[in-house]
Amino acid sequence: MKNRLEEIRKERGIRQEELSAALEVSRQTIGSLENGRYNPSIMLAFKIARYFGMRIEDIFIYEEEQEHAQ
Amino acid sequence: MRSKKSLYVCIVIGLVLICAGGGLQFSALASPENMPGLPFVCIGLGCGMLGGAVGNAVKYRTIRKNPELAREIELQGKDERSVLIRQRAAGRAFFLSLLLHSALLLFLALARVQPYITIAFVAAYIAVIIAYVYYLVKYQREM
Image (cartoon, rainbow over all chains, first blue to last red; front, side, top):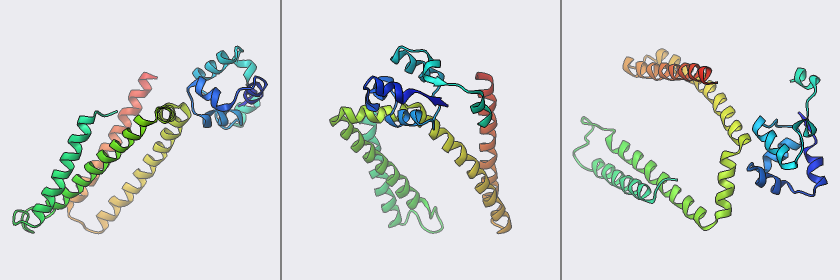
């Protein structure tokens, strides 16, 4: 799933280590999320959205074509 | 985290088993006619317990001196991506083990090994399948 996580994180000057510590996940998970190799659980998606003070849809981009491709 | 007491108990039991195995090997108690494998079972179990307990003790000592490392290890263990990876790997390994178990059963049957050995392997195979079906049904109901 495409997302704007890396873009938003860099805009706010947050390192991956800081974000992972705040979300209580590993740094590798943040890396995998950012390059689209891993889709977060709904709980983690909510935590990320809450951390940035944004909506889930503003961070994670759901496209119908992605669903069919998978 | 296991308590210090249980670790020390495991270390002591491990040492006792190793010594008992060594003693049995060189005594008349475990003769070839009478429980020939017992000394080796004792040594094997003893080494396993001792090694596991000493390894855990070293790990806990290291973690206690470095709380940041402890937190990192805890995070890695609970991290949802790590959990998912472990579950997927375990699932694949389980299906592979079923294939290997089937091949082993075939080999045992063709090699004309004593029936009770083959039956023991078949019973273990069936027990694993039953456990698999049980957890499938259980999680179907829960989720």
